[in-house]
Image (cartoon, rainbow, N blue to C red):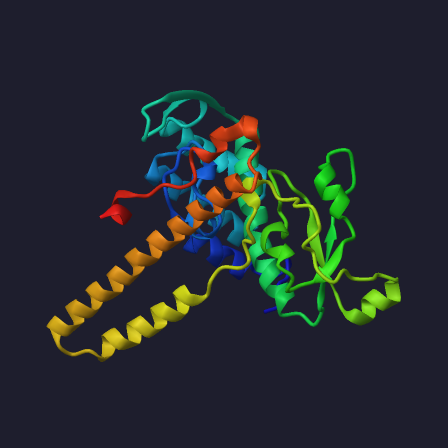
Length: 295
């Protein structure tokens, strides 16, 4: 797949459109694999409003709408539904109320983060199919650049290295870093010596971004296609009903697996000392085990 900013961003549009809206109070309630599949905005717990926001962002990607135009189009909707200006939001799990301000700054964060993540997904898929064997990390290198990101500027690794599983940009709120694809010949011509592996490199990604948005498991699409073919071939209504139930059970077990894997990752981070001791509250919310999954 060749990805171009001058063509309709179909891959980006489909990615955002396919994400399932889920109501969460804090962004870090969804981690790793779940982030790839769930569309969420911190503190927004109204599912209908999340769906409206998702629709507005996918339309912005498809139609090439910039931030200002998008902002002006969603503000009336947000005001009507009580999610604009000074508002109080309640944590559905604890009942605790927090006062937040929803204005241009928060809306810009929502717009930029979702746009960059979606483009990163499409860009990664395109880069993996390119002829280049290496990824080169590039930072903007100005006064706004994080020190951790600055240190990675120029680091070149095989594009299959595990380092990119957690450090493929964006690596934080407002991150402007990118990855450049290079062939072996281009590395030689530029005098770039690629690293053998990135296991010793510092982690640049903040915890909310420590996953690769491009490495979405294709199993869902493959499985869906096979399911449809099998269901179409079944003529008995009873057999079709039983098969549907079996498939639903499979999806149920998979959801539990994704949630449990995220929990295991967080526990391992605590044991390994990756969670800062004076910020132990980071561990409190590792995922939301929904009622539909518990049953």
